[in-house]
Length: 101
Image: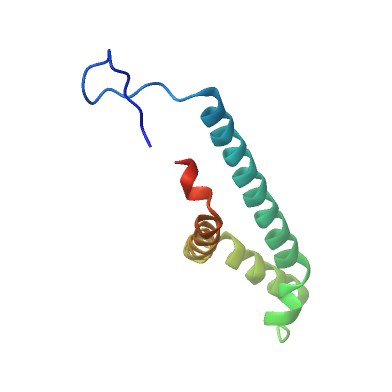
């Protein structure tokens, strides 16, 4: 919701309040932290677990290389990130975070 002061021209928005800026900064920090944790966990699993689970017929080096290739694949990571962000943002909106904007 935007507010326009009576003395400002029509359509000019007032600068955001400190409270709003703090919410944006905290949300950015939280999102970056979660994203880092997501990539850290997936990278660790790709290096230690995925080669044994998804490529058991290959050698250890080849299985690890293919597992890390799935981690580095832009299409796989992009689709996973889009799906996760859609799910999380939908849940947050249902909790009322959308009212902050």
